[in-house]
Image: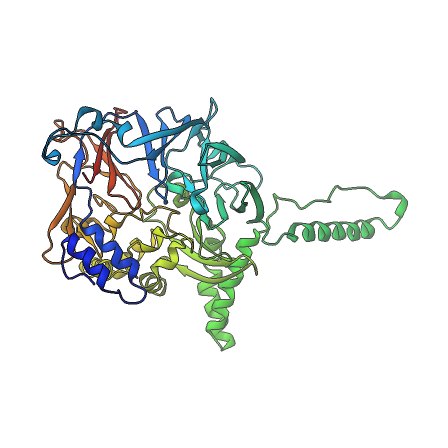
Length: 545
């Protein structure tokens, strides 16, 4: 739409020209090429907190105390100060303006964790409309845990995991959900997924998917559990069936009604050899798919022997790793080995994906992580795997290779430079299912507006060592500033983001990591550099002066 890069010309042009239908928001976002965080306050005076992220509506900055006991919530506000000189832009900021309190106002501080619990600093989900926030606290993780009941051997357990539903406006805790002697992967929201008002929590230890609903009044309500049973009345049916079998067995062994001996078989034995309901659904789908591949009976039997029965125990040993909503009725479930379920690096572990319909309790699709069909679906319809809320305004403009030509070019460049296509597919599928609310909606990550350090981005994209991206992750720090360059001619440098001290770090041997928190729509960002020795973080604030 805009022919000039001058902001004044663009404003006049916006008044006299009408954008094409359906492109008004995209045209308005081009003004971000002129409004960028071009000024940095290095090593700002701020509380020694662990800053988590901005909420998607930009109203709150979430942070935690260093002892992981308290939640501290701030409200962003724009810097204001007085200047007596004629040209204020050429003068340095006054000392009072270089404080954290000049940019953020503390709203409240709430103690969430008890004496033996800690807040999971990498976990936070904001609910629909950003009215509620979901936080998690837990006790220490215990390895070499004894296996009891249907617990999976080799999976550690946590004595107590508590999810806190909190009203972000005033910090009031409205509801809690507690799991005892369980294991839920809370790092980067991996074990929890939110879609509209539905919440999916994956119990790795007991292989159960808990589906909860967040009510308008702030209540967490159990909707269903998927694991040992798939329907609400499955357990009742099995209990009734076991009672009927027990009665007929007693009648056969003891035909005299006066000498009945109770054997206590009035409940489903949870320690028996029956497979779980979700595992039976999965095996049935795999078997039916292989059965339908061949029409000749002899060939069908041979195919089942080679493909199904030979790998039967491998299928049985699969456990649920991660889950995400595709919509309100379908789940994308990732299966793999026990070692891969608790490991940080899962690239070398075989994995499988299943699409599960919660209403019909059927598996409707099944893929291995090297399946080319799944990759091509991922390449063309990547946005469907993010499953963001339909009412989320800012989250609908996150760049992906299915909605952005520049992101698609980067993906194809990496694919062409790589070696084995099968290994490339496995590395790409390792990111599925996507972490919930793991990407920043900031327009400065919109790849149709900016590109950032293209050479570094190309070389390290698959290895997940990017210096900066929209994905919420800690990254290897660098003393060189990260450049944001305009996508439009003449491809000028718009601004730089440099973590750490302005003069750089003296000790180059110390390993440093950085994180970047971008406001969803304001030209405001925080870069946080920290070391692994619990030293105070270096916080820089980048904003438009």
